[in-house]
Amino acid sequence: MRLVLSSLIVMAGFLSGQAAAAPEQAPHADIRDSGFVYCVSGQVNTFNPQKTSSGLIVDTLAAQLYDRLLDVDPYTYRL
Image 1 (tube, one colour):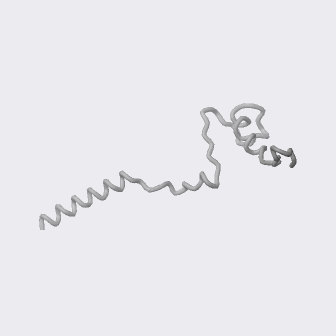
Image 2: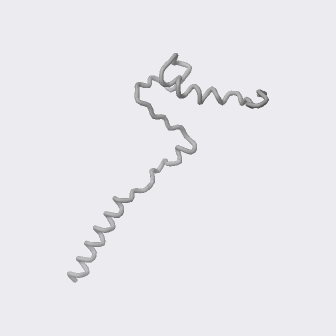
Image 3: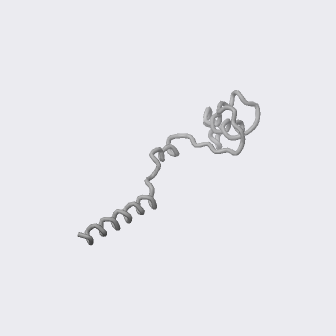
């Protein structure tokens, strides 16, 4: 009986150590495929580039948003 009890305690400790060592993937890990991840070291007042005149938002977001309005062929310069 002691052997069984000590074996169960050792197995429980081993399994809990494995669970802590290998955490599951984040539940929203696919946000990088279909979403928007923005990291900056500074103060962000708004994510709307229309409401800012300079700063971090205009430098990063405006190019990504407004570059997609028109698709220009780089060889023929046709829209």
